[in-house]
Picture 1 (cartoon, one colour):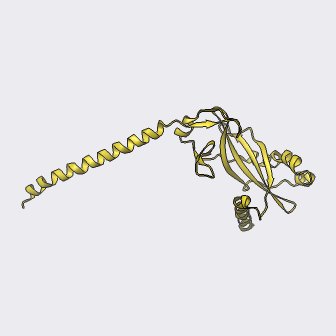
Picture 2: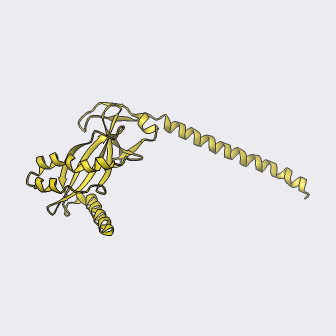
Picture 3: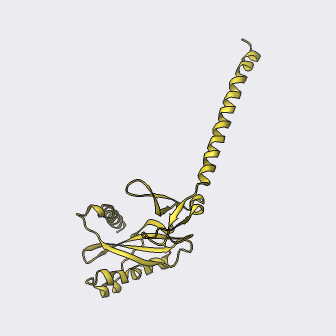
Length: 201
């Protein structure tokens, strides 16, 4: 077989490969376009509000992604931010005072004077948790703050405006117990924090 004949025989194979690649690219584009056009309905204003609104643009822009419930279903209340915002130095200095009212209301036995005289450094003690809409097209990001006070461990939940990064406020606080299965993830975070702080000394 000469070279010319060989090239002629390869032409059908070359065209077949090219067509296959083009079809695959077209299919991928169609799928991507279909995903971008998907409507995402979300609740707003709290767990007990049944009204929903079209939140598609927040997901299609890539700012947020779906969050799964414990049963595996996609949540219509909470979501996850693709790139959570960090806190500024000034905001970190204010975090201990953000949770002060929560401590006063939920755990009045904690010595708040000692807490105020020596506020904890929370620069490495916060973790992004989830996001939700307080009202249509007004997302808020929620963070966990990990506190150790008087030989006890607490997790405070705070929220901040997702677009400005400001308007920070405390929402909940609870004590963490090593023997409670529901606190297992928080226990892991406390262990990570302890290890990191030990290495930093």
